Length: 89
Figure: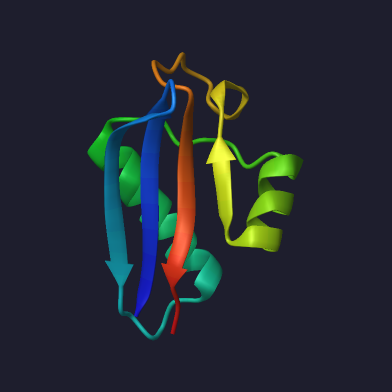
């Protein structure tokens, strides 16, 4: 089972969160991450964030990263969106 936790944070307060589960065996880890992020963006009504170098580096190192205003084309009304892989096969 693959699970990704997404949190929308503003002023150190949790505005929204959700956990996306994926138990498919035919998807790679990368595809599971992108699919989960797509689900989060759809549920939170957000445009898809861009993966900048720092974002990729943090995610590779910690299995967790934050998407700030620089990652979004549209204006956001929160400080950052954090994703964290909490369980993997």
